Length: 289
Image (cartoon, rainbow, N blue to C red; front, side, top):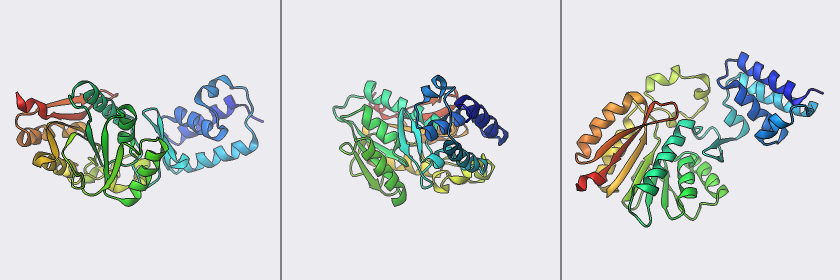
């Protein structure tokens, strides 16, 4: 029988030969799942043996990856901000850059806002990645997690229950802010923002993901524009904050629209972990100055 070290190297090289990004990390994650061991054991148990049955299971994963099916869909989960989330082909796979959105929302909520009970709307919630982490870290918050598809909200519901935050997250079905029954303190949204023409040029893994979670229309801003319009018409409290994940190329037009809709607000841009402009933050509190 081959050792874990040998199988890890072999898996790494195989995935690399397929042109898989982050092949070494994916090899580690695949082995962790097949062997049912934590990540540190990958390094501490290098000489342990991998059974033929385990090799068969690993090869099944590798064969599916050769077709560029995303590893998260194969395994049925994705780690995000320290928690595991159920994923399937009904939902977008949470991205590392969206962790910056959670981080910044937590910072704004915990440090920058005067409210005993924050009301937050996570628009386009998908897996619930943002809402669940906010619910975990801000137990006093009331959070609305909104999406437009029953199949998506089934996934959200499972993840909410799995992380024991059902008491602070209410799932709503509908168009953006429409189903939210009250003005909120914070709107956080990772909406589809890829221009329609660009989707076919993205890496093969993306083609497995639901088109409605990716396609933002001709300029990628269809939903973001409508969300900002709704927010300007009373769905955000006077001191409220909007935090959007965007494409770096969209920062300027969003800033312009925000200036028109919220003329007295402060609009700032935050970078993601890769130091790309990734978040636009619109703070209405400044309109009181």
